[in-house]
Length: 255
Image (tube, rainbow, N blue to C red; front, side, top):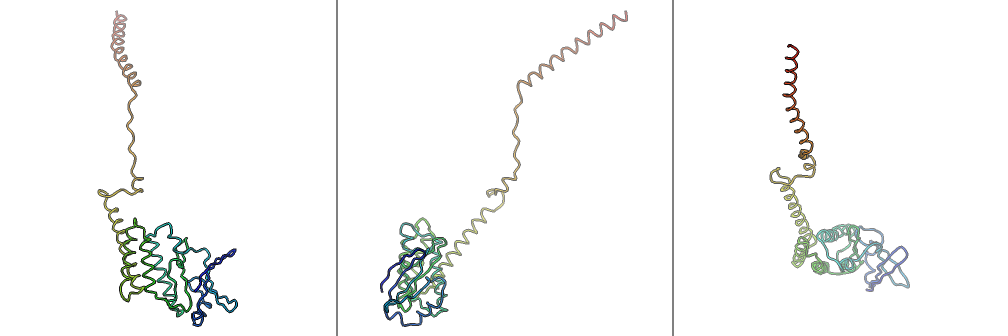
C-alpha cells in the first residue's frame, strides 16, 4: 500500500494506492455511494488499470502535526475519543468495519477550529482495531498536558482500559463520561460554596455596586471659623457699651 499527497489550487488530497485485494469487496461501492460524517470524503480514480483512493483533506491537519509542538488538554482528548466513538456508530449503518480505519496519528485529521475528527477508512483493509487503538492511546498519553491533571488522569485511565482483554470502544466512552461527571460535580460544589450567606462568602459584583458610598467627612475651614469667632466676640463687647450710652442719654433728657 502506497501513500502520497497531492495539492491543487483549492483542494488537498491524501492518495492511497491499495492492494488489489482491497478493491473486490462491497465496502468500495459503499464508500463511493455515501458521504459519511466523520470519515474523510472518498473518491476512486482509475488510471492504467490502477485504482487510487483520493481522500479530501482540505482545511484539516493531521493529529501528529497539531501535537508536534504542543500538548493536549482534557477537552481535546475528550473530543478526539468521543469523535472516534461516534464515527464507529455511524459506520454500522453502512456495514463498514472498524478494522478498516487507519488509527495512526498521521492519518487522523482534525479541524483546528473545533477539533472535530475525520478518519481515513480504506475499503477492504483488515487491521486490528483494538491493538491500533491501544497504540494511539499510548501516543496520546505522552502528549497529555501535565499541567492539566484531569487530562493526565483521563489519558492514563483510557490507556489502562485498553490493555484489558476484550475491551471495546464503549468501555473507553464510559471512562470519559465518568470523568465529565466528576468534573461537573466539582464545579457545582465550588459554585455552592461561593454562593453561601453573606457572612462567609464574597459579595457578588451586583451587590458591591448596590452598596451606598459613605460620604467623606469634610474638615472645617480654619480661616472662616476664626473670622466667625472674632465677629462674635466684637458683638458681645459692643452690646453692653451701647446699652450704657443709651441709658445715660435717656436720664439726661428727663432732667
